[in-house]
Image 1 (cartoon, helix red, strand yellow):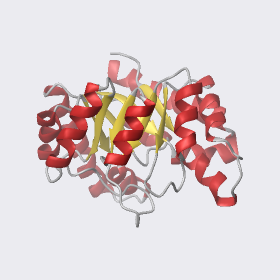
Image 2 (cartoon, one colour):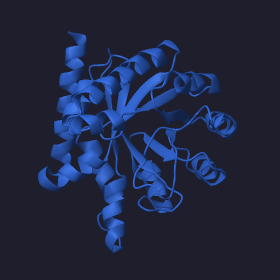
Image 3 (cartoon, rainbow, N blue to C red):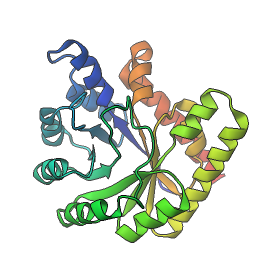
Length: 250
């Protein structure tokens, strides 16, 4: 079983910067520190309203990083154009609503098939690895495979929230959906990633799923870095993931 990849989402470094304006803290500097601390790639979400990451951040990330850039984006003409110009390693298609505080759920691949199909074709033709950020429901996973997306990222927010609030039965049910979904997706030939709401404990747990090859984590790491420093926080997360992966090999 290969080493589980860690993608660090640096959106909320930009959130802090934008709260006051100016250039500090610089999300590109944060990305470089994260890479030096042992992450495998950087994730950044360019939203329509530019509430955190901005266009120049994406351009600088692509130009200055020596690790893969995962560009989170809505499947709009504007964002597809930016992706084609920037040529990130990967593009993760996500749902986006301006009224939401953060991404509240997975993309409805079934309901938005007609919009997603040409977007996926265009990005793949440009050599960009495409993933769909979806819930682990069977219909969504099967549609991702039908659309030709090479990878999915399972939305883990419901499970993480239930774990944090100690809603035990709900957490168990959500976890089973994730486990079943990861197995189904892998069986369909999809590369399986996971993310949203993960902390040290939930990352260690999900790392034991052999089908999952990548975790994308942001808000928790940026928050913890206030107390521990970004490099130490990423090292702690890497250690938690490695512990979970070790259990999967046992």
